[in-house]
Amino acid sequence: MTDVNFNDLKQMLIKNCMLRVSPDEIKENAPLFGPESLGLDSIDALQMTVAIEKDYGIAITSPEQAREALHSLGSLKEWLKAQLAKKAT
Image 1: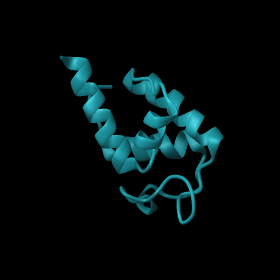
Image 2: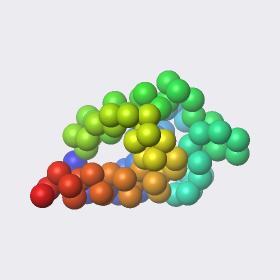
Image 3: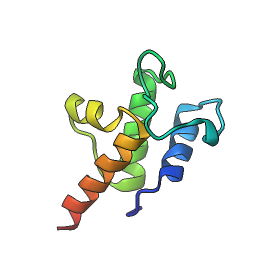
Image 4: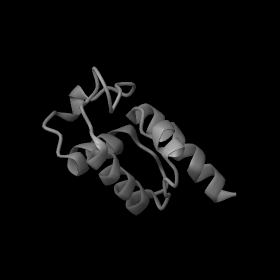
């Protein structure tokens, strides 16, 4: 996958983290972890990391990258776009 679509990221999140929410309930800047978030945990972070590598061919290689990329789906979208741009050059 080379394009980063917010709706695709929502579907990835729901599928891999087995969230019981509709895609319409997931807002772009809603935190994925912590208080007042979607309630993801460390297992969900691992699931998302694997899904990102599988779908986009980009590995999250450090805890710092994971914190930056997985703050929200909006941050993940921007992080993926930046990584794909680096990969294309």
